Length: 267
Length: 267
Image 1 (tube, rainbow over the protein chains, first blue to last red):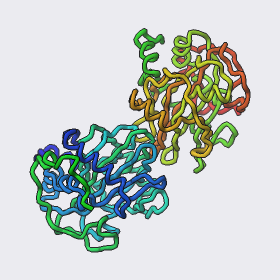
Image 2 (cartoon, chains in turn orange, blue):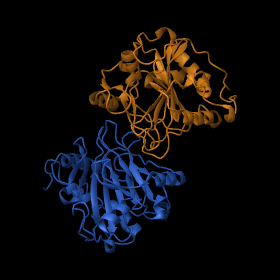
Image 3 (tube, rainbow over the protein chains, first blue to last red):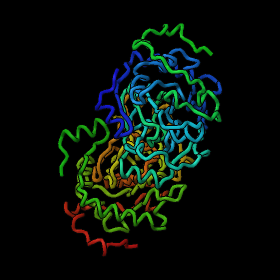
Image 4 (cartoon, rainbow over the protein chains, first blue to last red):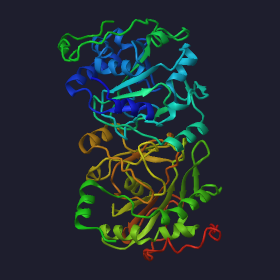
């Protein structure tokens, strides 16, 4: 898979690119099942909402074979190598649950703002690529993007330690209002297997999920290898310290997984 | 304005009817301005979120000329008379603010469940008709409907006194999950002036508004005159006790309002 010139231009202008249905249901199904198994495990990488349901599972590529393969899937990794114009390593790997009824808000923020402040990442030569494991609709807490907001660098932010269980550098209301009045707000929705690439400086958020349906999204944060982080404040399973370039696997790597009966988490 | 047979059939099957752009921007503009004035007033009919911003203004038709006219507008009242097959009176009148950043959740509920339990309304021969004063999008806390959920009568509900500032009879999670698995979830979105009619037993909710844009919707709850309430537990400005049939005004009634300089709330 290669991005076209038009897609690359759209990414640079809007700050994101939405590719509905990039993975088939057959490819997503084993990941969906595996995510449920991971969320049920009591381990430090699995963070929970106040209610106790899983919010985020970090670093699943280090303890799950299906998610290891997804983390090196050519449809995830190659488009990012194309845009960052170089080899990439895995800076962060998250399965964000946004559980039915209980999935909580993510306030407005920029991911690179966090990587810069907390991890000492030199430049925004890093970005996110996300894949939906569930259908995402207006009802179950979709990602909200402010198009073009990536063009202004890193905004000032306050360290929000109280809204949710996850500390986050969040933007003030005046900034969010100004950016949204200029660029609008978009909510990409679509079936399981849909993919979103977005710039590390794109301002985004997501509302709580009050629906009875889960909304699980996997995020790879990929960083150009020479732009690796300099500061090791956060645990290594949140901000990775292995800067080895990812070697993309074969395009059918998710279809050749062992049968469900024999798949299990390594850890 | 008359509903077609196809529209009436859709209403009875789905439990709601969405009519985008039923009012023009010229008609909506004075209502939008007036709503802001009302939300700024400190009076018992204006309820607030924990943060202090307005959540709901009740009974605005009794103290605001623009909202008095909207409450007797033929495009609001006549379709309901057509579906309920009789004259109607105003059971409840709400301007729901869902303010930018602070507008809070409404949990899953049926309105007729409340009217029956709290107000002793004999039958579900009453329904809501709503008009958007702002654009409603996936980002600013849209109404969420479970189609066909109106066909099963009134579900058991628990009296939620803690989630928000407004006490509400809400449905349990098992019921919501079952209904949504059967009927799906729809989020009607559209420009200011769009109108929604929905059955008193339709299960609905709306998520918090984390966007920087307001999302104001006016709701008339109209009841067939012989089906008037029997119990007067709630204040009369929440559950009205004047059962006089509404006489629809002329179709241009919102266009002949006095100029903004001379419009002011009566109270």
